[in-house]
Length: 235
Image (tube, rainbow, N blue to C red; front, top):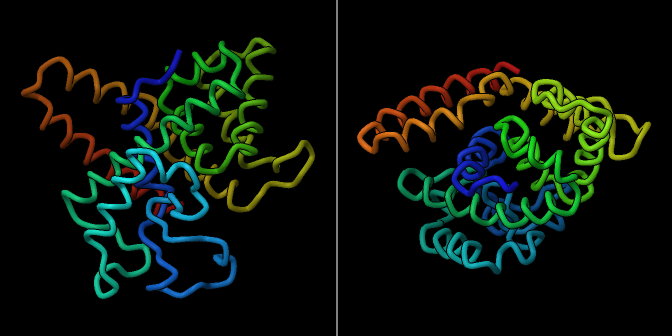
């Protein structure tokens, strides 16, 4: 069972809102220590290190929109453009990431684990963000959850807790100390987890029931996202 593009996009845009940064350009902003191998970046998608993510139809459109709108005077470090460009770029970012998410899910998640993951917004969030973290981390998180499911743990609440522990209590290999950046992301996900459980499915369900309610649902999601942002800033 795959995550629908609609559900994945809804969750992944929350990942962008809370865990990925805005714009960075080495030509505009200089190259600080640790960024030597990075290229122009928006929402965590790197124009150099991202490789073939950038050559997809969505990737090409994503960067062409940025090229058509960017300027060194306005696009400062971590800049996020206003609407409607902001939403266009977030939609395209989700389209860029989705095939890689599916590729990693099919490769590393057992079928039973994958089915459970793709029914729960918290677990999709965890593995959507893991796609940004890279294949080694995705595999580690998948192995940890597969082991839980193989041991008979199928309750989504317990698996969501295990996913947080996988980020915050251990490094890439068994027995390694936690990676500080991965653990920091895990703590932020934990702050969101109670909200994520029903937010996505409820919003999609209501919007489908009656198109007239779509605007009201969107407003509700915006309010929910504001609450989530407040929680993250306090974490």
